[in-house]
Length: 401
Image 1 (cartoon, rainbow, N blue to C red):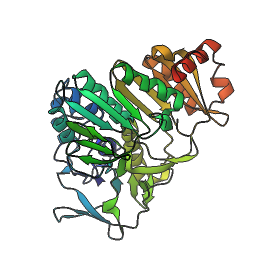
Image 2 (tube, rainbow, N blue to C red; image 1 turned 45 degrees about the vertical axis):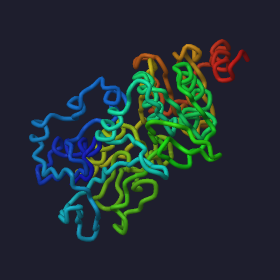
Image 3 (spheres, rainbow, N blue to C red; image 1 turned 60 degrees about the vertical axis):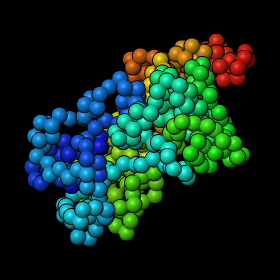
Image 4 (tube, helix red, strand yellow; image 1 turned 120 degrees about the vertical axis):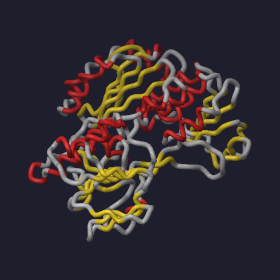
């Protein structure tokens, strides 16, 4: 059984069939939709560029060919490890021999009513219907999701205010210098970006800040992170804590594995536990968990180089590796002032990440291999030119160094 019918869950059931499993295979999903892609929700769907039919991860005929016992619109509500049973919201009790947990995450919310969140297809369609030229949108949270939505709304002619509690948006993820470069794009496109502010509640007229100020809005989007969907696993015997805790094989208990946004596992490549909320990781981890579940004697540790991308205005942002907690970032190609550059990330004496803005996929792809092979920093990263360093300082600090 696979619980969770999004990218990770779909990859898991497909892998099980591809690896030769021909027994009963149940796929449980809490949404009524067949598996669909989520990254376009904050981009092509929100902008109206795509119709919803383009979101489907597989055609109906491909799903039929998998021979699934498909349980959609039926959320899992409990797990009993001792008798290997999953409970569904409709009262059904389903037995399993092997289980993959892929129930993902849900958006964090703020006190008050009426705010939008952006996680499901229905969320995206509801917000899209409200974004018209001249409408005032407040986006709470300037992470990648909030930044993408703000960029789309500006493109649709909305007045956008982007509120962020941190001094520099995305600094925790990509570093302060790169975060300032990305922030400058929003300012240049007319977004009212306000940092160092805390939203305490959503109101009928907008949002209330910690200092008592009311920021007026016609619509409010809350994009302040997510919470793993682990409630249904309470008292199951699984260890949960910011996700389902797994070993290097993605196993959480005997014959129970986790994959996708909900899985927190130890990645030997970076020697840290991690939980990754990116589309590529979901598919890769779903496949890895399925193979390890089916072939216990030949299990392999899951050691990916995480990858994510983001589209904001005319910027294509791509990154490989584990960027958080880095010790140094160096621009090794391009010019940040032109929002076209590639930056490398160091932790200790190792190259651990690379991020590109406005570059072709070909430009950053070799860095993935360097990260995967644990390349030493001094071997992988040439000394950045003084001109490049001066350019990033000018963007970051607003003037020549």
